[in-house]
Structure formats: structure tokens, C-alpha cells
Amino acid sequence: MLLILTLIINFITLAMALWLGLYVVTRSPRSLIAWLTGFTLWSIAGLFMNVLLALNPPPELTTPPIWISYFLPFWHTAAFKEQAAHSWLAGWSVTLSIVLWHHVTMLMRPGRLTLWRWMRVLAGYGIAIAAIFIQVYTPLLFTSVSGDPLYLNAIKAGPLYAGFALLMLLFTGMSVTNLARSAHNAPATMPRKQLIVLAVATVTGGLAGPLFIAASAFGLPVPIIIISILLGIAVALTGYGVARYSALVNGRTIRRDFTYNAVAIGLVAVLYLLIIWLLIRTYNIPTVTIFFVVIMAIITHSLIDIIRRGLDTIFYREKTRQLRENLRQLARRAGEQADQDGNLALALDSMCASVHAKFGLLTLCENNQLRLAATYRWHGSGLHVNPGDLAADDILPLEPGYFAPPLAEAALLIPLHAETEQLGALILGQPVNSTHYSQADIELLLYPSDRIADAIQNIEREGEYLDQIAALVEKNQPAIVPTPTDISVKAVEDALRNLSNYAHLGEHPLAKTKLVKARLLPGTVTHLDRGKAVYRVVAEAVEKLRPDGGIPADPPPREWYPYLILQSAYLEDVPNRDIMSRLYISEGTFNRTRRAALRAVTQALEEMEIAAK
Image 1 (cartoon, one colour):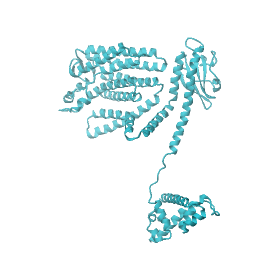
Image 2 (cartoon, one colour):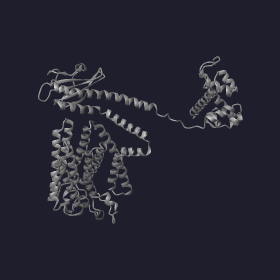
Image 3 (tube, helix red, strand yellow):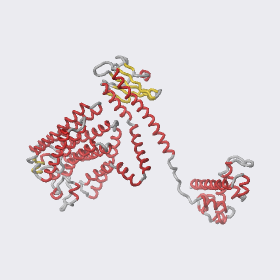
Image 4 (cartoon, rainbow, N blue to C red):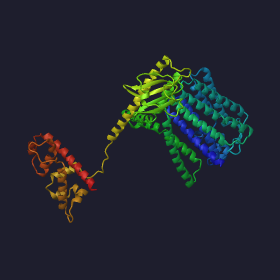
């Protein structure tokens, strides 16, 4: 049971670390914090891979290929020969992930990186490189690796292990300190919460260090699954925390996008997992294959958008590339429309923090109903006011008790206007150290409240625009083209020119259509019978051009021209000049109208042929 649980936990955390690293990087590709966080998560993923390879070692290779050393650079190729599970446990070093994360927390500190901060960062990387080199090429970090890989005491500490372990604990503590100071100096509540979450993640992951030291140095049989769970929690909190922190810094939210991407990648990973499991059961493929297949599935599907952009530069011209990029941005905007309350909550958080409000509410008036769109430090059960209670022309200071509880401590009402329409209102509680807001505080709130009103109006307009664009795309979708038939304009014109020749019509391509075959009477088998059926079908199609009502007096209206031209020229054998004279049209107009009429008759025959099927 312990073996199965250890495999499941490490496999899930490996997939989660890979995906979260890719998600953070792809959502903020120009952010150094995002890239360093991605490398941190991928580095921790190497630890989970250590356990999976130890519990499911690859098949023994007498002569490992050279490319193995590039594909698995931190794992010694001797592990492929020895088939020793413990050899895989000492593959990837945890040192790199710790110093990378320390660098991330340095970048989150307010202000620029000073010389002292840079020295600490560079010292961390120097220690990490030294630890990796010593672990791969010497026995100084681990004197021996033996025992049950399910327990941490399978790895025995070497003479330099204690020194490196203490240094890693030191860098973990400095990371927590950096995050705590950043949270203390954060200007708003929402970024502060994310920094606190990251600090909790660092502490949780850091707990794995003392356990690892105790097990390796003193031989305590600590199950390795405990380390995996602690690091898995740290990975989840770190990935989501950095993604959300980066979004908040850029003034956006990722809640729906994060969930959507997680579900999509999760479904893909499960599908690949099922397929490779069936192959393992059917063809006895090594179990270790499942790890690498799912890893590649997560990587490739997470990078699909980036790959598409790269291919666009090869296959499309600049204008087309720009159009496709605009469509992708439109799709993202459509997704952000669904998360508009998250963006409003971010703006409300910033406003309330700037004036130290005890609480804040952002209400929207929709269909003569009030909706609570965002809150700040609000613990009430609901909003018990009517739209008329929030109607105001300008910012309105409130006396205590203006609203009934739980809004009794509301001190400021800020209406949100778009032109002449009130879209909603902001209700701010009393300041932390006062019962009223000063005039300076009120003036400080004027500009952001106007921007919130503009944002709400833009959200509504963007929703309307997106609906219009969707309707436009739907309207301009190319019509479904029916199955091509043998009927062409040239064939129809030929049939019309030879309407009096039943023998010719009997061998005409139109005679092979189902439409004509359906018009044949029982017992009619000769080509002349088929010619007569073609005549009736073509004449019927021409007749469909005829407008409603009787033939008008000369000169006839323009809508009669197509029918009269075909009827007179082909069915009645009237010379073209007589037709032009009767209709008072030039030769050019006659020819254009005749060609248009022929196309109309051809399309009518095609539709009749499809209906006959």
C-alpha cells in the first residue's frame, strides 16, 4: 500500500510541477519572476522523478547510449547498468530549486536589487553549482546510497552533507524573510495575501529539509511520501501564488483561466495515461515509460499556443498573422468578460487600501436590481438596500447609522456614473482611525472611482461588441456547399440551344441525372424518351424564372427580362435583335441578363437534382 501511495503522490506532484511551471511562464513570458519560478518548479519536479525512477527503474542497459547523459544530466549512467533503485534517489539535487526560489523572493522585495542582495543571490548559485558537481562526481555529499527507496534513510550522509544542508536551511529562511517583508510593504490586500501564501508555501516546503537531514544523518526510517506531500503542497501554493501575483501586478486576474487550463491539461494527461497503461498491459512495455509519455503530453499541450505563433510566421503573411493574433486576443478578452468581477475586486482592493477603509462594497445595478460585484474585508451576509437608496449625483459622506446594519458603519457613498446613467455605487466603511474621510481622501478617490465607472461601461460595451462580432462571424460563415452535380452552365446552355432535338437531348449529360430519370414514364426506354424528359425538366426550370402575374404590356418591367430572354430565345426561337427591340435594351445588357438567367436556371436545376435524391 505504501508503495502504491508513494507512486501516485509523486506522479501527481511531478505532473503538477511541470504544468504549473509552464503555466506561469506562458502567462508572463517577459517576467523574470515567472521564468525563475518556472525553473524552481521544474527543479522540484526532478526530485519527484528521483523517487519514481527509484521505485520503477528503467530496464538494464549494458552500454547506455551517449544521449542518455544529455537527457538525464544529473543522473549517473551507472544506474542503467546496476539496476539499483537507490542509485536514482541521489540523482537530482534539491539545492538548485532553493537558490532559484531565493532569487525570486529577492525580486519581489520592493526597490532595486542592491549590491548586498546581488551578492547573496550569486552566492546561492555558487553553492548550488558546487553541490551539484560534488553530488555527481564525488561521494562527499552522500557516502552510500542503499536500503529501501521508500524511506529517506536509504541515502547516507557524507562528510559535506551537514554543511550544505545548513546552507540550504539558511537560504530557505532568507526566502521566508523576503516574502514577509514584501507582504508588509505591499500597497494592497490582494498582493499581500498572495505573498503570505508564498511564504506559507516556502515554510511548508522547507519542513522537508529537517526531515531529510534527520533521516539521512541519523538513519531514521522516515517515509519518503511525507517529503513528497510537503513538497507537493509547496509546489501547488507556489505555482498558483506566483501566477496570481504576476497577474495582480499587471492589473488582471487568472481565476477562470487557471481553472480552464488545469482541466484541459488534466484531461489530456489522463487520456495519455490510459493509452500508455493499455500498451503496458498489452505489450509489456516498461512501466517507466508512463512517466515520460505523460511528461511530454503536458509539455507539448502547454506549449501549443506558442507553437502556433511560431508556425504563423512561416505559413502566413504579416496581415494574416496580425489578424490571427487579434482573434486570439479577442478570445482572451471573451474569457476575461466572464471574470469581470475579479478585475473589479482588484480595483476596489486598491482604492480601499489607499484610504485605509475598514470595508468596501462595489454594487452594480442590473435590470433594476442591485448585485454585489466585489467586496473588500466584508463579512456581512448580504446587501439589504434598494437601488434608490444608492442613487446620488456626487460623492456623499454618510453619518453613522445612515444604512441599517450591517452597513451601519458605512461612511462614504460613491456613485458610479457613465454619462447620465448610474451604473452602480461604491460603499466604503469608516477609515481605520476615524469615523469620517478627510477632504484629501475624498479627492484621492475621485479619479479611481471614475476609472471604475469607465471600466464597467467598457465591460458592458465589450460584451455587446463581442456579441456583434460573433453574430457577424456566424452570418458570414461560408454556406455549406451541396454535393457537386454534373449540371453546369455550359451544359444547360447547350440543352437550351438544342431543345427541339430530342435525339441530342437523349444523349445529353442532363439525361443521366436523377431528376430526369424520375420524370420518365414507365415503359419509356429509348433515348428519345429521355430527350423529351430533359425538355420538360429544362422548360420547368426556365418557367421558375417567371415573375408572378400575367405578362405585362410592352415594355415589360425589368424583373421580367431574364424569363422573357430565355423563353423567347430558346423556347420560341425569337431572334435576339427582336428580343432586344421589344425590351428596349442594348446588346451588352441583353448578354449580361442572358448569362445571369442561365446561371439562375443552372442553380435551380442543381437544387431540383438535390431534392430528387
